[in-house]
Image (cartoon, rainbow, N blue to C red):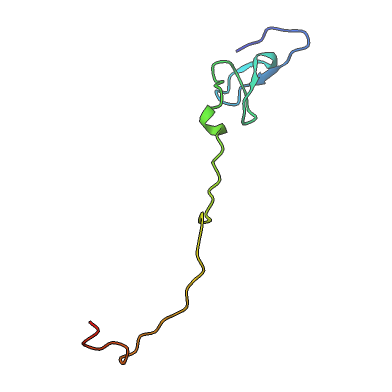
Length: 80
């Protein structure tokens, strides 16, 4: 426990470990915690990567053709 006096400094508690220390020894983290040097770690670089937007559109397309219906008179044994 720190009880020494420092002019212009005050005692604060680390948000991760709960130890009491001078506020000048605490550091800000990327998620807005005030932590001591033992509890501080940098943000992982993989968290800064942005996803590449996916383009769902086809590169080219054709118009849909007309519907063709086959009846029983269109197919004969000789045409097979």
